[in-house]
Image (cartoon, rainbow, N blue to C red):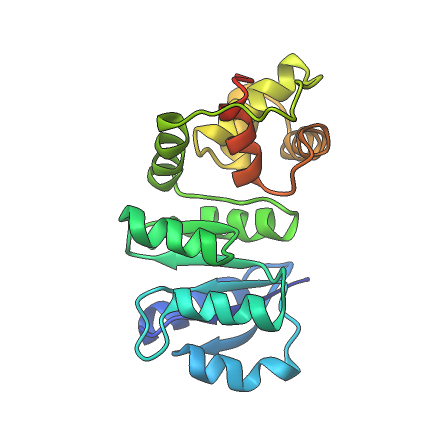
Length: 212
């Protein structure tokens, strides 16, 4: 059971996500808050797997909330879900410690898939956000001098290319005509071979070292 917390100030959106999470087998919402302040007041008694965090919150912003959360509980998995797509907020959120970034136009099925990805160590991003991240790395593709290469297989490179393109695990699986579990198996191998722990790190290393 994946335990989810929602921090979102728009009641209709917050309640809708809560219904989606609670109505899906394997998921449960253990907390739903309109502000970071209320969330942090309850945090000592909570053990979430994934936190869905809006950015444009009243009072403490979502980015400030992510920073505070990483100070209190380093490594906590936070998935941003917001309307903002400008570079500054995207990179501020990722630098603060968010492990994924989705826009609120994300379809419900993709949101659930993204929560699963986060729980399994991935860093899901909306396609438009992934393109922004990729464009920044491509402006200054400085090779990692300590990285001599990798023994990625052809299929692992195909999966990695899908991650670079911002595709979901399911979309990659459909495109390669393999199962979702097979894609997840390849991603675990990619992370191990590249010595990374997230999709963002894998994409960065792939681009800097011309692995694709």
